Length: 267
Image (cartoon, rainbow, N blue to C red; front, side, top):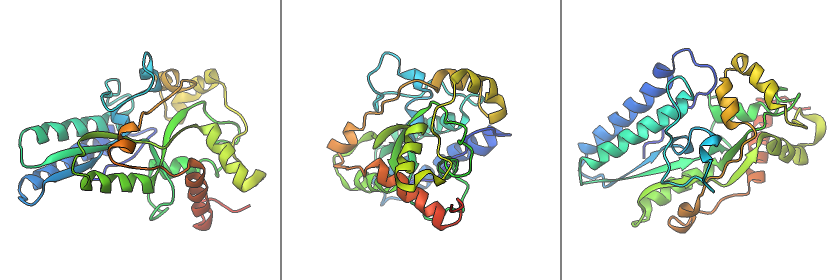
């Protein structure tokens, strides 16, 4: 199982060096090692829903994204993390197709949240959840909908992908679709009004003006904010037998851990 890749979002000073090259070289190194290990019959690679789609706007004309979809809109300058995951996965499939001894399965999770092994690491997932407790969203949430999945369900998906003999291809692993405002409301139900959870969504036009200062492009705001998202996880349920935890449990346990570890100050 190859699970490692830098998850860095926002303003990057060198996207190629920070996210693209590590993702691509890491994939080549691991699969090169697999080629030299006769005992390996299957590789499970952590890709991302970002390799399925680059922007919510890419869903135009679709009911949902499926495993047949590929991100064709991200680039080194526009959503480099998504571009890195797409590039690395395409390379993995190319390497897999050049041989017949081992097969490849890729896991495509949405935003991975839930209790972490450590809250000390720099992670896009942890930093996203931290924003709900550090006053970053107190004025309002961006009108952005994302796929959300529990980290334990993602781990289980990898195990099942390795164990289920008939498993093949790509698997979207996603338990729910939530806006940032939905996440704030979920956390408020459990932790009350003492924490700076958002009460409203900020206007898209205002966020577009402020986008460069926040490390986003105005194009990203146009193509994502206020637009729906649907990731079809049918194959993971029917072929792998995967079941998903309720998103409320995931979010509450994630935020509680940040409180317990002092990442977010108790109030």
